[in-house]
Length: 94
Image (cartoon, rainbow, N blue to C red):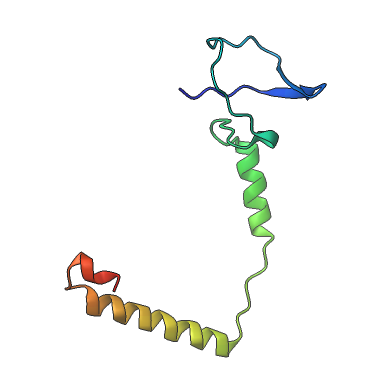
């Protein structure tokens, strides 16, 4: 069972603003700051805010020599994958 209750710390104790329908002695986990919250789907306003922030991002500039190293690494990884594609799954991670 997964139930999310919102509460506050008052005088060193956790207090919730709504009745709790759990049996006496039920173990609970208290996570501060909304950790583990499930607020449901993201609102259209939040989506618009995130998209606007993404539009303001500047392109990542990668120096040519670094880009060449990254390309070489990608070719090596791809080649290794192709070479091992016909081996059994037990050989993939050797």
